Image 1: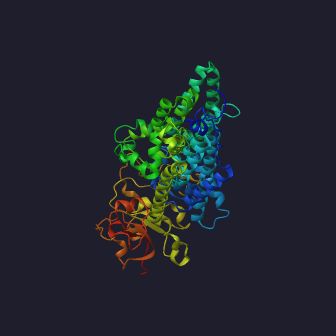
Image 2: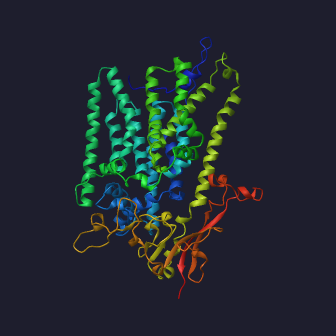
Image 3: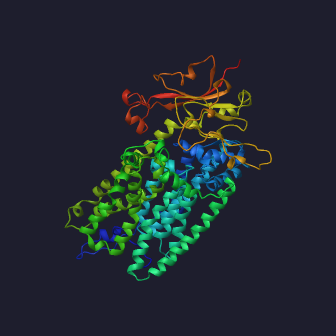
Length: 594
């Protein structure tokens, strides 16, 4: 095997080739210039950075808050950052804190720093998408590359994953770079570089994502064995492993410096999640049925998810019925490229604890599978062989057949994305009044009750404001606070000093709560029809104690139909009432002046 364009699933020319009696030259493949792809992806990711709501409280409390602590000296601390457990990487946080620190020279507010970091993530994601598009187009097929970019740009799943400050998003970036290295054979094999990128994702980001490299390593071993050059393969593996060890050493050194003890965070993550023991591990935070990821991916990728699942069956059909278009090399490469998505989906489907973000590293592979599957279908539709039924259909009808699913998938994706933004973006919009000196003078405590998990981070609070928790009906372990000062202990002592009231079993600590009488401001939601309780009264209706400083619409999921929860539905008179979206209010309240 040697570096050349591997026409996965048959190239446009080979699949659409005319009969032997009437040969036609293969049409030139359409290729979008890299600069155009870069700007299109950057536009999509910039919109995500500017508008996407934060979907997961883990993103805030495990990553935005520690970043805020490094930059501003205070923030909320989860048990994972306690030196007793040390299962979060300070190196990963430090990279983002460095970006946020740079932004302080140009950003006037902390919320602007938040969006500056998001924009940096958007740029990184764009660079990775452009790189893998280049590799797909030059190595596999330009049409596969175009379809891949279309899926990545328009899918609701990528809208959230592209700029999330999560290790799973980081490993998504590195997986794209690693795949590009393994895929692109121009100038020789780049095994060491590919292993390095997957290794960086596993070491600095999420250890479990290292499994995604396995299909590529198996391909290298198979090729080396057949070609009787297995020793060269092992040399390239060693080169990649040595590069990974350099980053592991950097990770261990950085985390050991922060925690002030020797610590290997990737191992701690694996140890807790796999060998945690009774009453520990991820399952104590909730479990989901095996259908969870199938439903979630169908929502976030609609038709493309179905095509991604069909990639293997379609490849088998192509191999059986059109063997002349599928060489052994093509088949091996095709299996290598479609296997990671199936493997990742299978591994995490059997895990009881499921989160949407766990699928982020596999999003590029989902898009690649779907692009390959759609390419196979288009190659069949494009056949001009008059002996086949499809060959007797007019080109105009074929074009319509090809465009209908693309049109539907794109529009459904846009409706879902716009629906999510308009429904759940309020938490990012209500804190602006705190920038007003007259309002800010009321006090320092901004309290969170039942809406604690939607708090967008301390980056949205002015420097003199602190987030506090009040008791609600939630029962579990809430974050504490990083130590802000310790005389003679050096800067940022909260990274290594033992916090109070932490445990790894999600057991509630009453010391995390503040009495509501100490609250100067309160974040709360109100949905008409919801019953109040002693723990969760309707604070918004208590006009004698609280006044509205800022309220934004927030989707009332309990009263909105399934369709209204899934996609954006315009508020127009001809839309039946049962399909209309229903709204509540998400508010920043201020204590009434005495």
